[in-house]
Image (cartoon, rainbow, N blue to C red; front, side, top):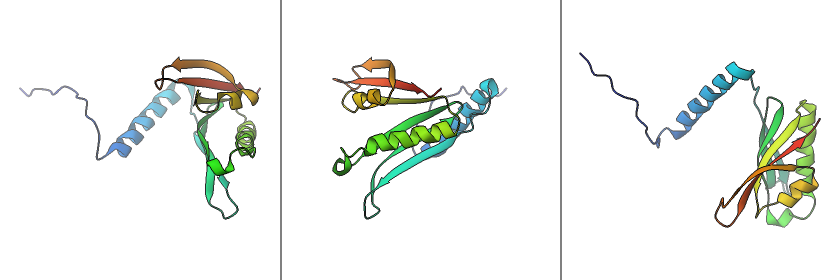
Length: 144
């Protein structure tokens, strides 16, 4: 009689990206079985300087009824010129064009929570002490 091995937990090192992709695909399939296909579409906007060099950008995913913004960053040399606002407005314009109802993002207390408030985002939660000495905030803006 063969003994059956129990599942085990393994830290992936050599094939981390492949495993990550498979875990993501598995979760997407499960979620779709419950609430329908998310129809993921990446959104990547860049800020380019006069020579075409990358000076910042915004990344996110459009899925279900929302845009989830992952990252927004500007090089120090281009900050204070309204480019962050322009990036966010362009992301919102694209979300509206894709008939999304809300935009979701997170930021830290040492980043720009006031910036997002000025753009109409509302804090829906936070984690004090993450990282130590700071707070992570979760924000949403309803588009409809």
